[in-house]
Length: 619
Image (cartoon, rainbow, N blue to C red):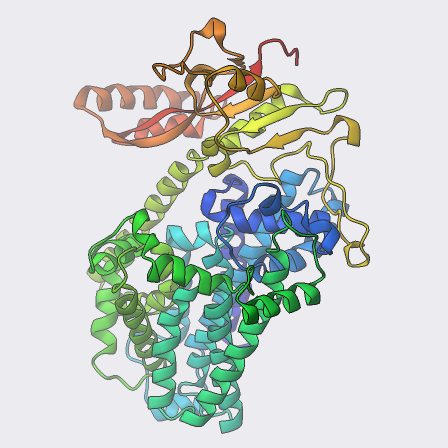
């Protein structure tokens, strides 16, 4: 086995897998950006995909979600199914909450394998290519591959977000694989022209599919990749056009068929089968009636870009990606990019540097295209992180020539690791909804013998409460033939004592109708302080505690709200406390407390979610 392959597959892959899995286990909850995918995967695994099952899907029970493609969740559910099944057999998955972690580990594993494949094809070169390109003067490819893996592992965003069910993470392995295939075609003289053409066509297929089905902003990667392939003669215009047209047409057809089916309006009609839903949508499109065929990414384009609705989430200056968002992704590895750019623009004939030039060109163009849009988020440029890390690895390789430069490199990597650990900790205390639902189940124990009815307010629903986390939810699969593999997740209740988890928004908070609406719940998770959900109709103030229906069960669940610099006396007191704590190790080891003593800042937390029970309910 080639030395680079050994480093990547026998060392890099296991290490990245452990790191990503640790992130998934140590921070198991999800935020609102991940909500659609994780809820959809739950519904697919539990209820199946037949027309009879659709009425039980979360987006049908609680409508209002922005349409996203079900193709990503379908693929993730398919991959997760055998893993959950095996994990249940081995006793590793005992609750539905465990299954959520298993799903995330599956997604993280796919992304880790994509990065490993990417690293192999970027840094492995044939003997013939080496001879033609000349010797590499900035360290061997083995060292560069190791530096790439080290930089990727040290950064926060990949390890943390690779397993998170945002649509960007679902699209990430497709984009990485496409970039890998293009890199493999650069300088690989051992492969025949037809084989290289096959790689190039596959790359176009993957990027086109990802753009049309998963995330439209990937077009900002598709454009520079297409132009590069045309300008270098790796594909002619006719083959590129034919490949793009076929892959685009098939992707549009696929998303239209699948998503028109899953997003049927069941409030006004009975669910059709997948072909019936497509035919109905096609007929409505021809006659101008609604609902039409659904293409979620086109819907997102019209809503966010054409109508300008994305600006409601904030508008950033044109340079925000270059001056703020991308530097945050790279953090202390940002200086390595500068060294890498300086190295590859000198025109060295190394195959690896030729690939790095392609990756840098693609990344810069991606950023430039998206900079033309007002609304900007780091997630939109997440796909170019591996490409930038290749450039950073070359920059790190350039620092290995002197002891002073090596010291700088080691310092940057150590600072990046410390920052990633710190950022990960802050992120882990930012899911009050997930902590609240977990605490509720711990407080009340098993669902057996009593039926709870829990109302989940908007904030907890956005910060960790999912169907997977709803342990005592009734989970009954439909009887359709295609659903015979559904009903996978563990259940903790029988039909008569399962809980109801209600996310209904805009319940009345004043007047007789408010008391009637809220009294139907036995417990609530709310951001209303002290569980005071009832308010005066005249003044809008919370009613007195004696007139409230609910009371707190525990102290409120806190959430991260910022950092505050410690003054000298605080630092002095904390270091004295640190010395006492160290003397008590390992008998009394509280790593959380230890870290807070070491830090020069105070981690500020504020009450976010209150866990409440109805006053006349004994449980």
